[in-house]
Length: 184
View 1 (cartoon, rainbow, N blue to C red):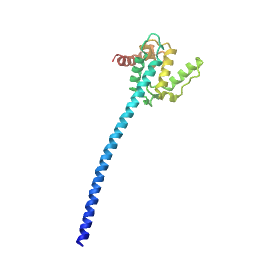
View 2: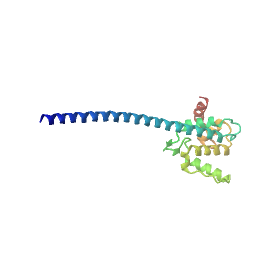
View 3: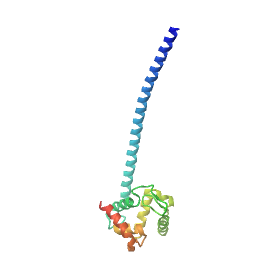
View 4: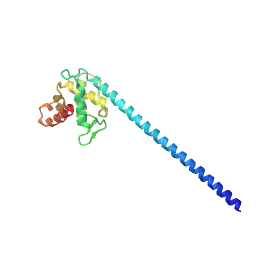
């Protein structure tokens, strides 16, 4: 009976020891897996930032020579994006149904499509196009060019208040916000 007790005791001890060893190995594996997940997550963020950088470079090239008197269109577009959405492509204002980085409303899409139709262009935008940074910037470019907006102030105030926004005193505060972003 004593031998059986010692055999059971020894077997239980070995089993507990192996279980503890496996638990330690599992903890090590979990830590390594967590570290690898962190590395993968950081790599994803780096890749995402590279895409944003590539997009900004591409956008800058879109604006070469668009509005003659303004040499650096990227400053005004970045300032307006910062004021409108804090640089958030997924921004949504339900009250105004304003969407995307430039907070474009349906009336703007309709106006841009009307401009394109008048220019006999086949290009058209949908309301969903507002969620795309590239499409939003294209609409911005078409709008500015069509209304012959040639200064930062004209661009900002008309973006905020429509084609006659430069004449609307309600857009002065908006212009100040955009100008502060440009100057910072």
